[in-house]
Length: 224
View 1 (tube, helix red, strand yellow):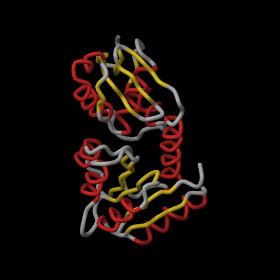
View 2 (tube, one colour):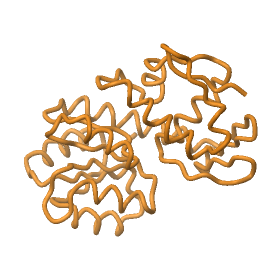
View 3 (cartoon, helix red, strand yellow):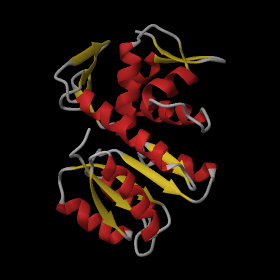
View 4 (cartoon, one colour):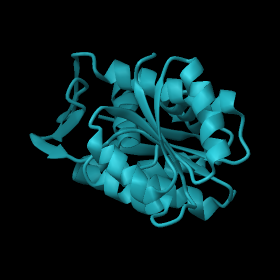
């Protein structure tokens, strides 16, 4: 998974160096930014960035605003770092389209593992195959979803979640199984993360959102 470009954004130089050293050891190319304004300049100057690791609290432009501006034009995966273990912050991050949310202090090895998990999924999405189900068409190569011929705008994680539902249509899926499969690691946060993503996904799918059924006390299933 080497030779991919990752942008690390944090106003603490020691934190940037720590993260960079671990990523470089795995063969990644790492770009650094010390504040949100610099991060946006670097991001828009480099169209081949594969992933962002983004601190929340920074001078000039904070991580939330960076995320908003990046998401306005790109679905590049974003991992948010924060010193605050605040549920509201985490939910806000997912609302903005953040793919992972990690509270400081954290293990650099765990961070690298999550980076690699996201990039593996990104690589799989580049495979030239299409899924179709009940008027839903998922083009993995183009990373595009159409419903009854109309394209819908999904975040990276929403795309992964819908793909997982379509691949397992008709099967009741527990929240734990969804987290372990879509997030691809043992999730240490609250399973309500799933509910937040499903709510947004249903909304974007319009009437087809009703195909995602709630299995009370368990999780969800796509029932076509």
